Image (tube, rainbow, N blue to C red; front, side):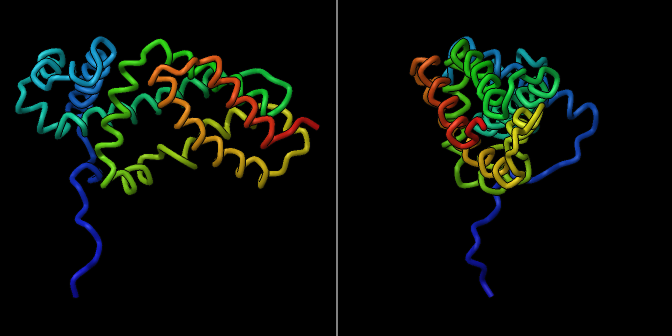
Length: 208
């Protein structure tokens, strides 16, 4: 019987990489991030990416696929780095809402300092939408899957908020956070956006 399911894109195929392959992939992602930071989406030319990563164009394509797949991988990597930074430097604050709002503000300032980079990676994110469902699920990125939000909220006294409260707030804030990143990259005032995120956090997890 014919399946109604669409074919899985090569984008979502999970591979176990050798150390050499992992190093090559990291070099390509770093090169793409550098180029996108300097000149945005159009600056991420695969020939220049390969040159900066110290490999042939053919090998670059073999490692990461298309330009949009490379930029999506860069977005995933940026998300991982944000999570590691949050883990290493948990924000101080009396309440869960205070802590996550402070973390949001710190990350949004980084986005505001590199708008061309985030415009580029989110352009690729949208372009890759047919395969995102499975990629997001397996890679742990996107709405309801931004684990560091919960970590930031729980880094101190919960002030009586239940696990159900915390999990519900994390899911909602994850969606809001992703939208906020796009609007800041598009040029919206970062202080305005972080203020809205803080308001949302305190409404979802009101102070006792």
